[in-house]
Image (cartoon, rainbow, N blue to C red; front, side, top):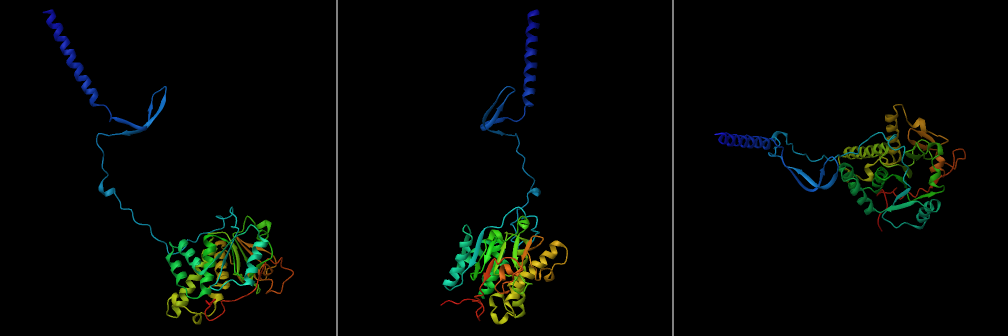
Length: 344
């Protein structure tokens, strides 16, 4: 009888143990499968294994209402305009000269002018664009801005296209733009006075009239708001001129244009930069501020040089307005019925 109770007790103990173990296993967390690049850790040692993957018992699906379609990015039609003063104070103006050749061969006089830049600035990088390479440059860099791209490519008058091109290049790459009929007399490194070198984003010189920026030579950092303002001003003026004659910009010709200087040239550039300066500085800035200055003057981040710098020849070589930096020869091939050179 005692033996029977002993065996019955063992059986009950075995059943209870089995039930306890089954209950514990049911509470275990999801299994961890160790594959490549996982980490096996204990208190004493950490070893690198590979890719631990946690496999939950049930994989939740995101609710349908939370799954949003990703829309395609919008293509902007205009360049962004932002204050450039603080953004560019730490970078240097690119040491590269940009020029554009017409459809005719570059003659000996222009070759001499081109070489003057390299003689005075031996380390200067230099690129001369042709009609075709200029078009390709704009296609490549302004594909995201179809309004600008289409207006540039459609312009039939060479001088209008060249005026807009210089601004597009200065926006993208910065550096020095100069027309082919300009001789360089002083190293570019000397153009900005020492006290303004870390504050200048654009360098412009006055024309011989003493109150307008010359467009044949200009130096700037890339992506400045001032050049953006010039581009927008010029494109808007082209649209307005075309609308006035009930044509598209692709149908403009020289007979419809009252003044190239005012439409796309130095006057347009001067007005746009001064307007943008006034907007950014919050104080009146106009021609009265720049007229007949006799020494380099900094307006926020725009350095204005007296007319001796870029227009000494036309200004009668003034002796009280600093050094002569470049000399413009006024070849003026655009001043004809076609507004530019024609092919032979």
